Image (cartoon, rainbow over all chains, first blue to last red; front, top):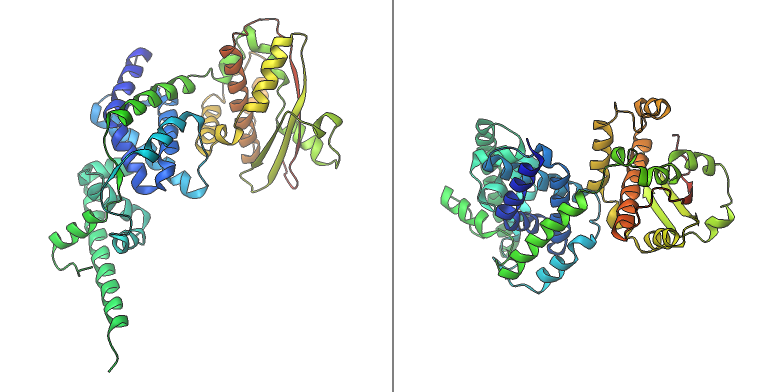
Length: 177
Length: 213
């Protein structure tokens, strides 16, 4: 693959996916860490540009795979500030947000986070990031059929967890006779 | 919260739990495009294995000794060298083994005042914490592994060293060394220093208690 070709394709892939990558990172990290994490994703992508898949769709999955690794690393250590991300960080602080207030859905997010890491990520990719189950499987590096099985299992576990949470709350708030 | 009794209920609950994100705006879109291009430039820093082939910085790579040899030598002593008591920069690192390392860099010397000034400016101003991220180090380690079979500078001694099986701590330090070297090289390029006979020496001393290299 010619270098110029790969550079042009990565520019295009980032242009098409960078906002989605930003939102992916904002949904998984502290809001203020997302700009630095995105800068890391882009740095890694550019350093590995020779490995960029040829198809547009695979390129997109490849970028989200990098983002997933960056969030995984972020969980192990406090994210460091990159000068590269300074402008974006400041812009995001002042920019309006869309979506539910932070406290809404906290129980559900908590229940999702108690699933296994892979099940939780499947649920997030499908419901929060808008991937199909097969695409979510591609991000996680698992076949579509495996992703479908695990997604159904994740839903079952999540439903049980939420029922048990609601039951526990109902019991604890029930007036004693 | 309602108990999810049907698939639709569960879908709604999960969807509504989606954390808030930034609204799409022209300003953010423009910032993202800029970030992508800046990342592209930053990522295209010359790789160390290419540095060695470049006469302009051939000397530089040999004198940047933030490496394990310096650490091993220094870790047995308790007193920092006189220059290290007022270093240009200090790096605090946690190695894969969990050992904590303190590296002091300084004693910069050059016949060329411009080179000396640029190097001093680099060590004093660089955000090493921001530079040496986990992702950057992991990538540098992977890059070192990819080029592990290639002699660095056609020097058999380098090739032999390169082929050795290194401990995770040494691989980590080598990655740190490469990243810092690349960044310094880029800084020289930024300020237009390209002299092939540039002379610059830099000293580094480290303390890594408990490390077995």
